[in-house]
Structures are given as structure tokens and as C-alpha cells.
Amino acid sequence: MRGKKVMVDYDLALLYNVPTKALKQQVKRNHFRFPEDFMFELLKNEKNELVTKCDRLSFLKHSSVNPIVFTEQGVAVCIYP
Image (cartoon, rainbow, N blue to C red; front, side):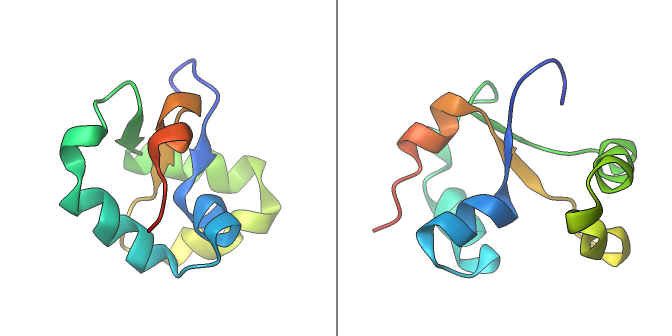
């Protein structure tokens, strides 16, 4: 996405064994640790493209919330307490 390799918030939450909502809350509380080159929220057309390319993320098709994606640096600083 946007020329970067990224990990979707859903996958990162699975990695940490926490709900996606909890991960997003932690990120919002610590937003100063995540500049735009570490993470960004997908636009609607980017979300649609992601759903089209990745069948396993088809549940996002009907979600009203756009996913957050993390770059390699964002994943590195996203340590869930």
C-alpha cells in the first residue's frame, strides 16, 4: 500500500493475541510513537483494493471502519503491554 510493505491491524492483533479494537485503542493512546511513515489508515478505495486482493480479509468489505496498516518500523514499535 502506498509503495510500502505493511501489516494490517487485524494481523498484528492476532500476533499479539489481542482484539483489534484493543490494539487500535493502544495506538491512539500512544499516537506520538507512530508518525505517518510508521502507520496510516487506509482510504476507502485502498481498503476495497485490499479486500479484492486478499480473500482472507473479505470480512473488511462490510466494515464501516477503515483498517490501520503498519510499516516495518511501526510493527517494531508496536509493543503491546
